[in-house]
Amino acid sequence: MSDRDELMLDSMGSTPSGFEIKMHAGGPDTARTLLFIADAMRSTLDEHDAPNYVEMEVKASDGKQYIMILQRKGKLTPHSARLAAEEALEASKPRTIESVEELDALPAESVIRSDAGIVYERYADEDGPEFDFWLIPGEQRAQGATKIDLPATVLCEPTP
Image 1: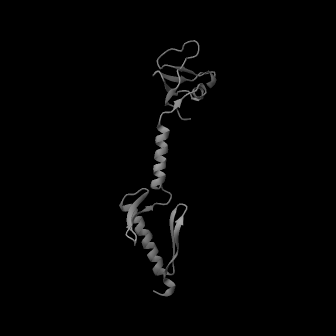
Image 2: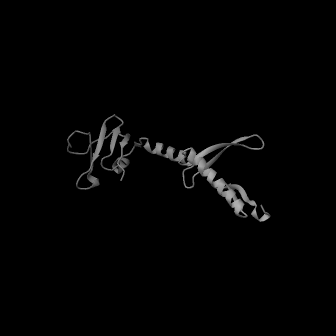
Image 3: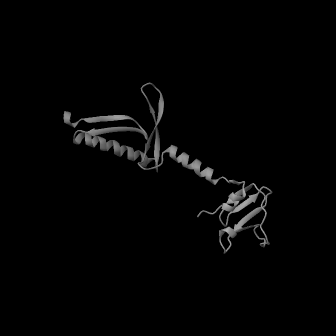
């Protein structure tokens, strides 16, 4: 291998998204080495049927152990996957309605349970959303407004 065919490390260090190593090949032999490294990384992901990433233990020269993550480009990191799961869990928790304004803002087909334990469903009125009404499922609509004791828990809220 000639001097012009050396594998060069251009930079290595922290980035806002993690850690980056930049290398370049000085000729065909080192270009094959870089391709070998890239192929070995891809094979590691494929062998472990990893849709997003694999974790590998590494030991530094001082003996401390670390986890290195090899991730497919554009896929979720463990951290972003955890954040997404936490957001989905939070969004799935029932929310509490404490005011008439919040109650009026719920769309038709929403289902709530009052503080007294009574379940109500919001029905759409043909004259528009401002005339929608709440009923206990299976009961007939009575004259006047249905009185709902607040706070109430939203059990189901249709998505637009």
